[in-house]
Length: 412
Image (cartoon, rainbow, N blue to C red; front, side, top):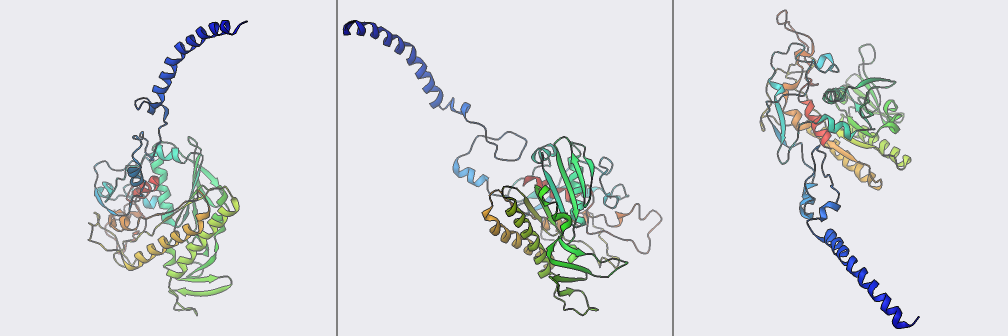
């Protein structure tokens, strides 16, 4: 075959290929590079924890400011006509001493307030969103009875969307949400570290071992995805502090042959021991993930001594500036925040290990109306006013202001 004959046959084929290929190439270029079509190929990136769809991706400068964390601790209480998501009848998980309305509390105004941060929004709690976030996870609350108060609030909030099942577990109270295979548990450990509480039938002081984490909860650490730590009140009563086999001193112990060293230093050491034990656990597990949130100290509102007939009968929140944070409450909060920051520096080497502070001290300070008070017991004045009525000005009514702690918690 001659060269000219080959060229004569090839030329029509090339022309035919170009004729059909050029429109396709032009369409592809238009598809990929035209601004109107480009979003079809860019997946939506959700940049918040809301159940609503995310807006279009912002410019880099705006995105940076969007991710700045909100200071939920700085704000004020404002009226809210909506009221709580649950009540003392619809939620059966409420401890009797916290079920204020069922116990006969006559006023309900304390239920109609919400916390409004100064520089950001705090959306209403969304139980379905929260359950989706903790799907296949285990959240453990570790601490004192106020920690138990908070998890009961959280259980009641979540139960408005999905029914929890109580699960027997040695060492903790546990609830399972089968709809999302999620577990919540409460480990009673008022010192976080090892300790023996004082009692009516035993010693009148606590024995606290500051360098030994409490194995009651620590032995289950490998099962936990998120740990919420809260403590403090039990350090304010007579205690002897130990480190190793040595007694370091005591607090409020005039009848004992120990030096009174106060409780600030021991409280700091207890939290440091706890956080270090979690970091060490994270180090030994390698890729295992344990996130930690430390809830700051919640002030009490006794008017008078708690053990000498002190009461808390206010029915409205304090206005901003009306009540100042006391020196003791401020110092405990400062210690907690400092220890979390120090722990963050130690844990920098571990990717995905998160340490945060749930700062509730100020918003709790402003709610003297949110405690059970005399209504920790059913109808305390049904037979008149007794000479002495026991009051609870430490824990919180359910529903009540403590629900706000969980609104902030789920935003984390």
